Image (cartoon, rainbow, N blue to C red):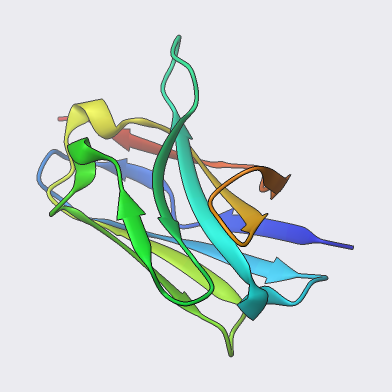
Amino acid sequence: QLQLVESGGGLVQPGESLRLSCAASGFTFHAYSIVWFRQAPGKEREEVSCILSDGTTTYRDSVKGRFTISRDNAKKSGYLQMSSLKPEDTGVYYCATAVASCDPVLRWGQGTQVTVSS
């Protein structure tokens, strides 16, 4: 059964860093894209970053230069390194998987809370 489990969220102060992890199981991980989304309170879910099976990456403008997406196919895991965090980065972060591109999403993780506050 295809499953994604996020970890690494928490409460940090502005300017600090966090690394989110996404552990995958139940599918051929290396052949699929990994996509990170986030949803802030009262707002719609938005795509943050995506990494294709060939390693190509995309980022939304607001996180470019601060966030880095990566994957370790041997560990069947995806990662989102977040630096210089801002209060507007607060939200629930979801890991998702897609075939060949960054959408449509096949399966969502349960989400992990990231709170950036002083």
